[in-house]
Image (cartoon, rainbow, N blue to C red; front, side, top):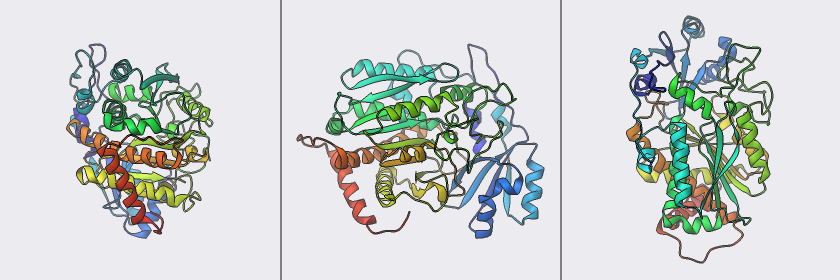
Length: 447
C-alpha cells in the first residue's frame, strides 16, 4: 500500500528523534471508475461526501482513483459509497509507518551521487546548488527570488544566462511538500545540463531557469513531522490549521473549481490569490521576464502524466492546444525511450475533476506558449509519494529527456540565433524524435 513504504522515511532533528504524525485508523480508498456512473460520482465526490478527501492520484492505465481517508471520516465514506452502490476497496495503513529511524547524514560535500540515491534536506539541496555554481561560474547563477513564510530562501538557478534575450524555459518543483521525487529531478536537471558538453549547443540558444524547491517549509515539515504534508506552512490567526495549497493559490480563476475555502482542507486555496509568499515570489519572478519565457513545467508526483491547460474547467482548451499535445507526446515518447515507462498526455481539466488556481494554467494565461504539469513516477498507490531511493535515478533520467525535448522545441520556434557548431548525438536524437512525433500526431484529436 501507499504508506507501507513511508516507514522508510527519516525523522531526526538536531540529534533528537521525533515521530511522524500518527496515521493509525486512516485508510487508503481505491475506486475503479471505468463505469461512467462511477466516474461521475468521483468527479463530484466532494458534493457526494460533503467534503473533499485527500486525493492521492489516479492510475490512468487501470482507471483507479486513490484517496487518503482520515479515521474520523472512514465510516461516513463507507456508508456513502454503499448507498450509491459504488464498488471500492479500503486498505489499512501499515503501522510500521510510525517507527523512527536515524536519517543518513551526508558527510562532506553533497554530490550528484547523493541526488541520485537520497532524498536531501533543504540545506543539503542548497549546498549542492552552491557547489554547482562554484564549479561552473560562467554557466550557473543563483538568484534569490523571495523567502518562504518561515524565512527560507527561494532560489532560482539561472543556466546559460549570458545577458542576451534568449528564450527561457522555466522549471519549478516541489510546490506540494510530500512529492519528494520532484525535488531530486530538478537538482539532477541542473547538474546534468551544465556538466555535460553535449548540451552546450542547446544552452547557447535557450536559457534554463530552475527553482528546485518552491515549498521549503512544507518540505522540511514533511521530513520531520508529517510525511503526508502537502501545503505551505503559513499560519492563520483565525484558524487552527496551517498552510495553503500553493497550487490552488495562483491568480487565474482562483477559488472557483476543485478547491476548498476551509483552512484545514488539503486543497485550501488560501485567503486570496497569492496569499502565500512562495506563490507571490514565483509569480513576480516569472512576470519580470514573461515575454522571454516560452516553456514552463511544474514538476509534481505521482501518476505518470503530462498535463496541459486548461485545468480550471472541463472541455475548454487554449487555441493552440494541438501544439501542446504534439510537444507533450514528444516528451512522453522521450521518456518511454529511456526505460519503456508510459506517461499519459491529457488535458488537466478533463481528468477526474478540474482544479483552479494552478501554476500551469496561470503560466499559460500569461502568454507562455508551452505550459505543462508533469506528474512523475510512479503510477501506483502502492509506492505513491514514497518512491524508493533506488528508483530516483531512473525517474530523473526520464524526466530530463522530456525537458530536453521542450527546450529543443523552444529553440526551434523562438531562438534568436542558431548555433553553427555540430549538435551532440543526444540533442540530435531528441530533435529527430521531436520531428517524428510531430508527424505522428499531426491532425490527431485531443489527447
